[in-house]
Length: 285
Image (cartoon, rainbow, N blue to C red; front, side, top):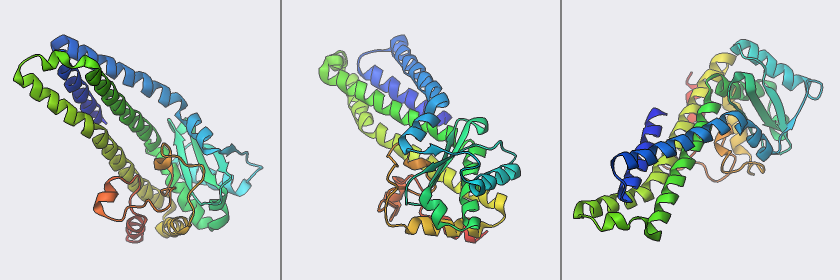
């Protein structure tokens, strides 16, 4: 996370310097963008869970609505030492689940109706343990911040390109040859920075999925339950209808069918590790 923030600071400095601002002026613009990042993170910290729930179409349920699901969540929370999160159900035949929230005291777990209908109890426990692991490991907070940082890189690039094409870069072009070379570097960075930011986001997301698998298996002491659940979820032919590109990384399995990584290159742009690899690791525990 520190390196990601440092990457944004470097990108901001290169862009401002290329547009003709030097020394304190360039550093001032970097500071402004970092302040913007702080405000965006503040907003996402407190309201991201509400936005995700609204996008997913999830409905809050009480204990009387689904006693078995509630008891399963409560029992797992006792094992983890977590306060029980709010439980939501998404009316969708595609089996899937996600967790969100800024900390264990403000957490949410959501499951689809297809997940409840298609999994056995021990498999459902594996999925819920995985999602509660995201809460315990603060993955929900980490990924919210990462998404905001990726958006900030896109904002930086957009501001720079607009300034360049509308004359903001003339001060740089009228200077020496070194400034012209620096401008070329900035233009290349403007193309590559959003791609690099996305790759960082995807890499963090995949690592946190592996960690949640391991933590969930440690809690239930039965890795096979989660392995079987992943097989069933991945074999469902249709996508999760309420999922969006902004929330896809939250789900236990990629909600968009046909987008799973098939090679090392496509794997770089995947929000989730290959299901086969996750199952193999679980069954080797």
